[in-house]
Length: 284
Image (cartoon, rainbow, N blue to C red; front, top):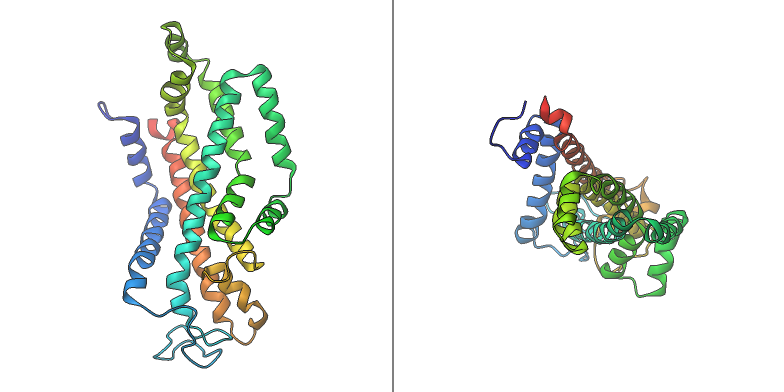
C-alpha cells in the first residue's frame, strides 16, 4: 500500500527504484551520457582526421579501438559521433510528443466532428511508409541534423496522438473534469491544467520509448547516407564501413554496440516507468 502523505510521483519513484532492470538501464544511460559529455574534452582527436593506417585492428596504443577503411580513429568517432545521434533522438521525440499531444488532446476532448477530422489526418500519416516518407522529406531539402530531426518527428507522431486521444476520452468523463467545466473553466484551461497533467504518466513512458525509436531511425537514415556527411554519427560510421565488415569488423561492431546499449537503456527505463506509473503496482 502507498504510504500516507506521499505524492503519486514519490510513489512512482519508489516503484521504479525496486525495478532492477530499470536501474540497470538508468546506469547504462548515465555512463553513456557521461562519456558523451566529458569524452570530447578528454579525447580531442577529430573523427575525420587520418590518424593511422587503414583498418588497423583494436589494441594499437595510438588507436585503441582501431581505424576504419580510411584510417580514421574509431574511438574518436564513438565519442564525438554519439552526441548528434542522441541529440537527434531526443529532439525528434520531443517533436513527436508535441505534435501527438496537440492532435490527440484536441481530438479526445472535443470529439465528434473534430475527432473525425483529426482521425482522418492520423490515419493518413499512419498508412504512409515512415522510412520512405522521411527519405523524401530529407531529399527535398539539404540533409542536415535539423532536416533529419524534423523528418523523424513529422512521420512518427501518430502513436502518441492515439495514446493521448485515448487518455483524454477516458479522463474527460471523470467528476473533477465535470466540476471544472461546471465552475466555468475555459476549454484551454481544462485541457492544459486539468486533463493533461493526469494524462502525463503514459505519455512520459511513450515519449521515453520514442527516443529510442528515433535513435534507431536516425541510425538507419545515416546508414543509407541521408544525413549530413560532415557530421560524424554512429549510424554514419556503420554505413561508411559496411562494405568492409569482413576486413574491419570493429568499425561496424563498436558503433553498433553503442546504439544497442543506448536503445537498451532507454527501453529498460521506459519499462520501469511503465511499471512505476501503473496504479496496481503502486498499491502493492
